[in-house]
Image 1 (cartoon, each protein chain N blue to C red):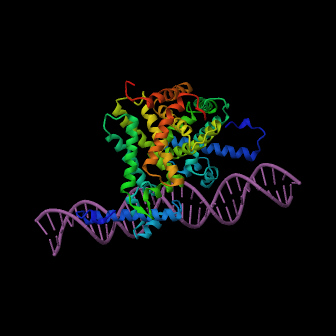
Image 2: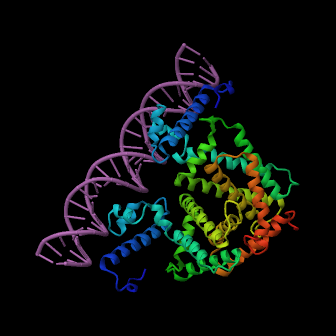
Length: 216
Length: 216
DNA sequence: TCAGCTTATGTCATAGCCTGACAGACAGCA
DNA sequence: TGCTGTCTGTCAGGCTATGACATAAGCTGA
């Protein structure tokens, strides 16, 4: 995002990155003010004076641009999962990968109107059915990969042993919950998210083991 | 689907239902042979000789038609959940609602080329990214409703007590797994699905309680 | 049976998303 | 300078979806 950080970059590459960043920034601005569905692609490209056709040379679709950061977040999670030390217990691994991913999000993202860019994107997604659908599909696809990673780490066959699926399902539910909390009451920071995670984990056993009631 | 079953139905209503059914049948045929994305709406409407515009008076979108049965399945599940007797334990309730929904699916659906129509649809969805995304979003929306139903049954506040979310997340994972199994190795019947459900439930406690490994 | 209302459909026009094909501009390199 | 490969603009077109208006068909009451 900072042009000076790649001084060795060729002029051609730099211009390309500038155009891509300009597309993202302009698009997010327009999405925020006019809404995703009421922003035409040509409005984005007109604003930075490139042809509409150019947009589709950078992004496969309008959706693709809007989900740029979400995809990165998901990929980061799977990468973090795969990179955790082998001795770690699976639940701990997921928890740590989760922590790393969100610390990264909060760390290296730059601000827009005083709030991190991914927050804008999450609100946008939650308020736009088409984007919500696409991001859920990405989570779904990513779950498959995460299950493979977990299964290989623990040397189990996911077709027989359902535990990897369970863990990832819980992770998915957690991410959804975290997004929900962000949307309504703002972002409480990494520690709040981990507290949510632990609350899930703590309630998991009792939820299934005995009778499920307010007193239990 | 059988015209004789509503003898009192007005001519207008009957024609409307016939057109709707013809649209669904023709569309599924074309989707199956040509693929969803390579089937244009005008091809569907040409085949039964109505205007393209008419299609969009019956269905909000091409997607809407393809997900017709999925939406019904989801709604049936939530309805079944709400209708279960109050004394039942939550996990049992979900299990029974699950059973009811799929028994209903297998019962009253009519055959296409020797297999139930919803099987065609599920394969279609799993092989079409756009449809998968849309159906996941519908599951997501439905989860919210299911959580509300469960929470009210058990008099808990879902914002504090995460257990309703956990149960529904597990249900979601199960549905995904069942669909996966259907897609690859055909449909094994209600009992197989319940066995999957129970396998999840049985592995849930041990998965979290102790160290998660092949020996545990 | 006819008039009048409602509903379903057809027709036309248009916006928006997306792709393919081709040509021109430009950076990088010999 | 001239060649090469990449990026971009332009044009044409297909597909999904919606709005506006007109027409036809079904229904209802006198």
